[in-house]
Length: 390
Image 1 (tube, rainbow, N blue to C red):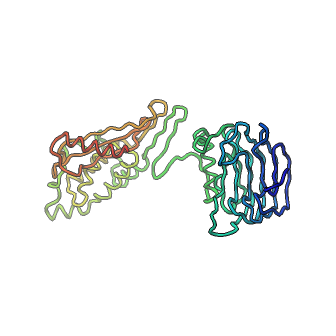
Image 2 (tube, rainbow, N blue to C red):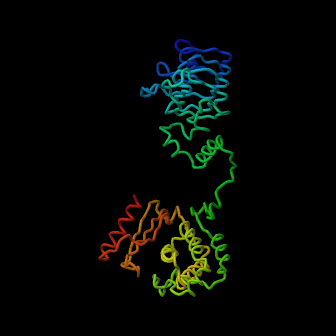
């Protein structure tokens, strides 16, 4: 142990140290570790510091094996473990928590409990709590909040930065760490792997490296609601014989009265939700029938029933991602028709992007202007797809 500008400094070679009932300050506070000396490691372990009052110290809770403004020397490979700061109170002038550990050997087993440190002067230039390669746990809320302490243990003995730490940590460890961080702020319950979210059902085959996302239950409920669950299935979302246009909108009082009793907008809305989530195959059909929601006719209603018949025969359709059988890269496909809209003679843009063999983004939409050639229509479609890719 050593003192100079530090109130107490616990340096290289110290272990099984217990410090309590100390009034400290001004100065650097209580420091654990050092930069090492003559090629030695800053080895400090099993240290407990508790019941300490800080009086205007630069740092309240402090660990150091390097200094941030310097590159870490080759001779310094700080190894610090089993450090507990408990019931630390008082005021600080610069940093309330300063935990600067080593890149090559992070600090482990660092525990913070009942830390309450307030700035000496409000409005003065103060820093947030700082942690570098420090792993451990918070046993209680701290003042100010310490969010930089990494929970658990480091995944390896060499960690370069937070990005690398997370990229080399197994997904399960990252998830558990993230859950612990959230559980401090919110009441949470771990229900395991997600199986259903927003009517989307998730199925996994981890051995085969596959994941499916379907909406079977949702589609069946919609079909049952509109008495189409047992309808005769068809293989295409919209038959080629449907030539939809505004000329098919009701023109007589009888037709208008009849269509007013048809829940056209509701049925289109239900299918649109399925299309947005897991059914890119019905995108074009839903886009077509949705153009006439303001004044639909009987033929438009027949087209809606046709889509229902297609869904009745494909309730188990969905999206499959194949980790082993497909490349982990985003692929895009785009096309357009030419002057396909019978009312405005505008063309339709369609594109889809896939990842690991499964679609992740898709769209079928009428182009904003009328094109004069197939080339122009293709360029407009390509432009929309490129914007989505970016």
